[in-house]
Image 1 (cartoon, rainbow, N blue to C red):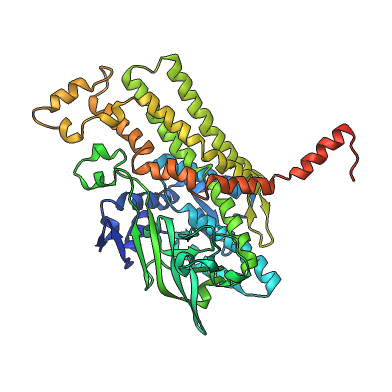
Image 2: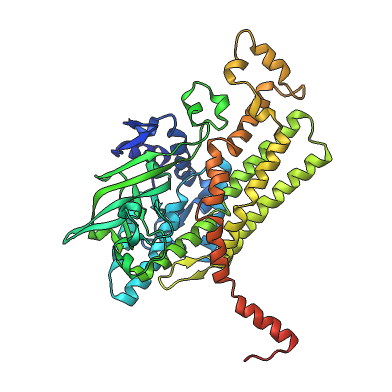
Length: 482
């Protein structure tokens, strides 16, 4: 396994082509806007080296018997699925941000079981190829970015019916040694902090969409690949010499558009190419794993937000007010409900044909459906308790100003024994988590990450077994089956 420092140095060796706010960036690792997100991923390596967290952060490879980072591991039991959730909560607590590596972990588990079943039915050899890729991922401790979401263009049209065929990643040429692909993947979490990209289809597909039923892996800095970095609220504060106003100066997350401009992929790294009947299975399983993930990562960040909100109440002298206590209790209740869902869908997991464990899909979708709602209420309550000063306070430059600094110090003080700067630090952290750069990985990602709310409702309807529930009711009142 790599150490945190080795991980950082490994990124420096990659030749990314990335645009940030219209400028081509030569050194993404040290760019002030990107750097905090790299620090979050780096934490997944550092905690794996800490004996205190070894049980959660590492696992025994079913392929080699060696210890590997859990983010490179295929779940071999329900216990593995539960440990995944606990690990994600821990990392959310340590970073108060999106640590980005979950999407690759969820992707490898989905691709593993899908390729196994695809090969069994169709006689292909995708699973053997994928296993070789996974072995290298474990040996080199790669961070892999799972890339599923296509731009989609006109969403009323299937991939093959789009006016612009590049709205979904597709094959443009097949060669004896591999394929050439073109298109883009949007909203790619942590792409620039990854060694490899693992591409998957984004929706279930029909026979006419065979050019779009694709899964493959490639180096993140492969020829023909470039990135356009996504903007986040308050992101330019990171460019200022002003730590206080950032809120969370050390950690963050990022999203990017990945563009594939006629990129060559050797056959050994292709795991689906035209098998449309299995595209839906891959999408469904990846989505299930990733919806499970939100019962861990968002809960850990929620722990930090609840703690910051409680401190804001302490520092303002309102902690003993009954309505404040009740709001904090509600925040904890909502957060632990999310965690309960993550644990439940993990504990109810089952073995797939490949041996990899899959979560209970119904409960995973219930978990994510709750995540589309509860963090918004947690954030609302945090803003309620924090008060308006969270978004109207002066900058750190004003606090440190030779003339007006004492004025800021005087009028923005809360309780007497707490330094004004500590109160402002906590309020800026709450701002960051609810409105700033971290809100992308907490509030907005809670809504749209791993699929929008309606996507979960579709799966809940599909998995809810309503006909069986009807039979239960009939049995109770004595209505005979027909």
